[in-house]
Length: 271
Ligand SMILES: C[S@@+](CC[C@H](N)C(=O)[O-])C[C@H]1O[C@@H](n2cnc3c(N)ncnc32)[C@H](O)[C@@H]1O
Image 1 (tube, protein in one colour):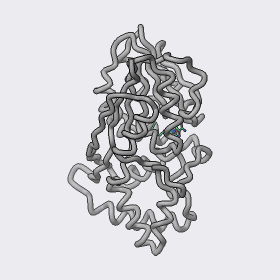
Image 2 (cartoon, helix red, strand yellow; image 1 turned 90 degrees about the horizontal axis):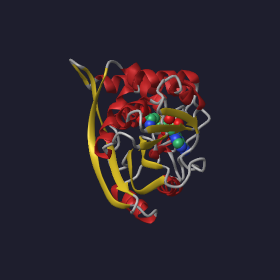
Image 3 (cartoon, helix red, strand yellow; image 1 turned 90 degrees about the vertical axis):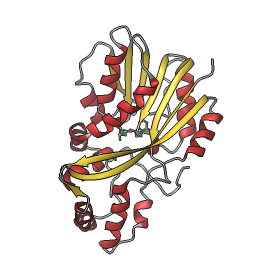
Image 4 (cartoon, helix red, strand yellow; image 1 turned 60 degrees about the vertical axis):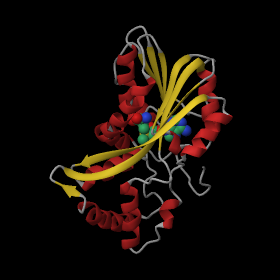
């Protein structure tokens, strides 16, 4: 599941990328609402959003659990948490922190823990799920979305092609890939970490982007500095030019239409 070549850095984010993510991250928000639906948050529940980013989905979750519930959002990136903290709600708090270490939270402190497009950025998924299990109450629910290596996003396929068209080796992109997981790998992971009732579904999500800059801005800001970072500035310019040509072939009257694929997975802690 973990690609030993992949090196995801948490030190390449910038306030500008965080700001762009807040502007364009509504796509991730829409994917996240599909994650929350089956988790069926109820008024009064305590929810942990791990890898909350700029907090848009956590704010939505806080409205679902209402004033008697509460939502905590954690994310390792200061710039993202700074934006998240601008969201004003008495039942919503944000803090910096990593999924691998939830030790600030007590055992059984949450009814629901979720990760929206976060797990594919993390190599040590077992520790993350062990931590999530610890902070969940018995019967507590867990949900996540994650990229599946058998179904790469269309934009990723086009990016690889653009790298080749730019006269560069597309394998250099794989060295900066994400830690995606298949259904079988996730099932094994949930089993090993003591969850029950595992269910998952690979969903196709067709997105429309106004122009290539928007698509690139979203991809770059979602990757918090891990997008094309293995390429020089001049190489990046060539890749972007080739990518623009390839993506334009996907233009429809509504905009640039590209499919993304995310696996939605759910389980619960035993009673
Ligand atoms: C694509 S963004 C998704 C943000 C948010 N969940 C949303 O739905 O908008 C991925 C997030 O994962 C976070 N992340 C990366 N590594 C992490 C880790 N080890 N622990 C917790 N979050 C992490 C990043 O900081 C980033 O905010």
